[in-house]
Amino acid sequence: MSDHPETPVVPVEAFEPPYYVAVFTAVRTPDQSGYGETDARMEELVRNIPGYLGMDYAQSPGGLAITVGYFRDAEALTAWRTDIEHRAAQRRGRAEWYQRYSLHVAKVERSHGFVRAEAPQG
Image (cartoon, rainbow, N blue to C red):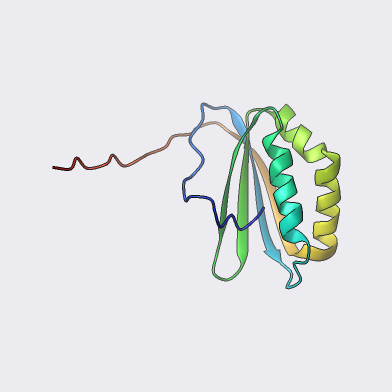
């Protein structure tokens, strides 16, 4: 998905398993005309899918982009995969925006997180 310049750097929280992840790893083409607008629309659409849990995004200095979408169940993931606007964006991505990509879907069986406690002031 997008470069998320305005999003704070906070990973999606750990959820009680099982749930599903879709890991999309891509290298984009030089011409990204229309990508930003389409990406913003895809983010709007996916947020409205019942069972959508969140998304993490990272990009390496060399241009490898990784987006991880989290879904409560297979039905939520299927709803996203089969959304008509999302399918159209996928076709456009293959035609225009992606040099190459891979998609990995997995069922999460274990999940945990960590947050450093703030040091008391005084």
